[in-house]
Amino acid sequence: MMKFLWVLVGSLMLIVMGLYLMPSKTSAPVTPYMDFDFGSKIVYTTDLQTPKEALIEHCDLRGGVFNECGSICEPDVFTCASVCAYTCEGIGG
Image (cartoon, rainbow, N blue to C red; front, side, top):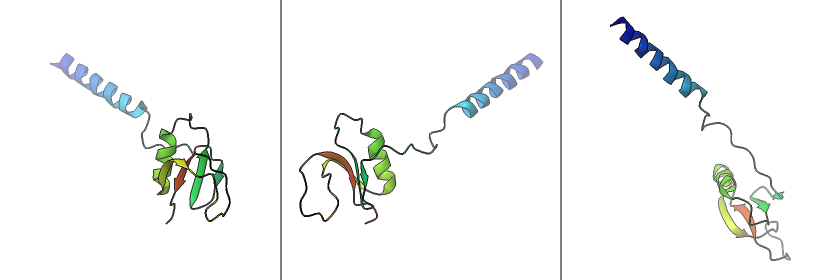
């Protein structure tokens, strides 16, 4: 009986240590590289080969809407080049 208790205690300790040492999913997200931050809009990159998962998560955290082919231009600009970019739009609005 005593051996069973020691095995049980040892197993529980290993489980608790494993849970303690596991990486936390609530750790602060890494801020991705941004070409431009216009306040209400972020232009992440025009390189559409860049993995977008972290950008989508960052945009969600900022309260915006991720756009896979957004404009590189500052909001309310009259003339601008037409180039697709990963953007986060509608921040704070």
